[in-house]
Length: 286
Image (cartoon, rainbow, N blue to C red; front, side):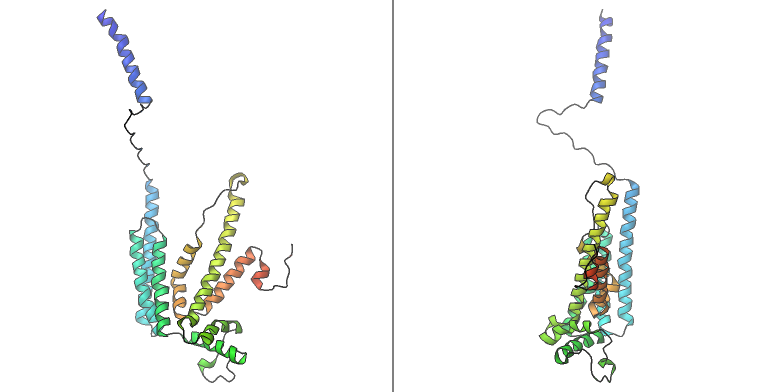
């Protein structure tokens, strides 16, 4: 009898063990359940992020080398100042990008823009060092107020010639009104108009992209939310690029024109052709 009774008991014990293995047992009162382990990140994703971070570091390092080479090779004083400041800024951005946990972050772009735009621009404005183009524009603003024309009547030297359209003289009006104030420097207004126009263009363009993604890419026509880069990030990366940072600091008269042209294209793409071409009396065809 004793040997016959062990069979059912063993069967019941094995069945209970199987049930406990399949069904998780609730923790006893007063105890906490162990936290689930995070899912391991795929190695392909880690390799991709490492590659992107490496490219960002290389990008800022190349920019730093270019700025240093320009500082050593050029004979123009404003360009030497920009090269020295930008080389440090880009080099610091490369170190930050190398140590950052997320590639193409805003911190590295902010450091690069500070070293390549803000610091050299403030230094050059404080010391009154500027290119000839800035002097021509500021003189044109004074002539526009005095005589109604931004052009010298009888130009005799290279500095007397004004190769720009009359609208460029508007950037010289602050110098004619405020005198020697640092806020009257035409470079500050070049930068303000360029960055402001590019910010508006980015808002219009990115808004159009988000709308198109919602309308055409959402499944079954559902209106889902779409992620897009912020306008601040776009401006930081744009301003930190050497092709933009150098003229922003030393005084590039082409930047406000480029910014307004980009804004006009963005408005035209959204259907605002009237505002884009500046014809308030024209009517949009509906």
